[in-house]
Length: 342
Picture 1: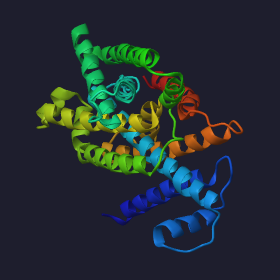
Picture 2 (picture 1 turned 60 degrees about the horizontal axis):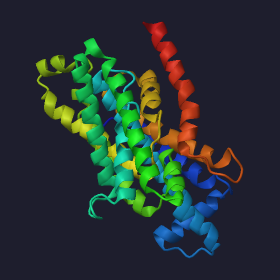
Picture 3 (picture 1 turned 60 degrees about the vertical axis):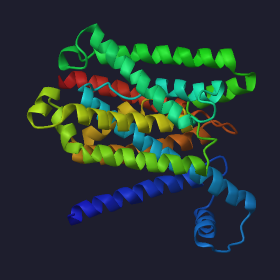
């Protein structure tokens, strides 16, 4: 590893730590940085600083957990967007538009409200199953419509994804309306718009390893993703086992998306705007694009979470509202820039 690469890695780690620290200190009530440090020292190093139990509880159980999950969720969604855009050769591909998030929401709500699996099926497994079912149906619809995901039918996968999203969103709404009580309806609807308020350490222990594994799998296949830039046929001619790689990286993207949706709900625009912003900064080579997109996605979602807590006094907004407010204009700029470069 060269000194320059070590410098990049170190700077990236410091940046994400700074973002998480900002997420812990800034909120409805500001927490001084020294108080955060003392709380971490007490919890992690066995120190004995005299702290207000309420402040320590807010920092350790509320602020820190949601900042960590926000960082890894943003990184996961961004990486998923990069992977889907490369595999499908479509600049508009992302887990939200392709219906993966909607399918994961349906699977999670089915387990949560209907109790599918008799308690043996976890929320994350239900979300993962729903995301896979949704993506398979979207691909089958695109193929049936005339051409699958090749360059000759580059828009079909997006149109199929929109149809799939609407279908699974309708199924989710039907399940909630038909089977949930009033309290469950309020909680689930707020969760579906993206909600980090209920995140605790159990969620951190699920999100961090899943995101780490998924990101590492995608980075490991960075050269194969470069080959897919020229299409599946070109990748096959270069010796890439197309079906195997497709199954692995799309499965990793679906796994990350499903787990994050099961924890924080469906969050749009991260998987489409951040990959394009990263591509603008470092170019299309996935060796640089993947880690930069992960870093930018993590920082962006931590900042969005801060915004969700401070924009409206005494009220926490769904984080999906913040990402849409920022992502929609960014998406418009991407479309305009793409038109000018054609």
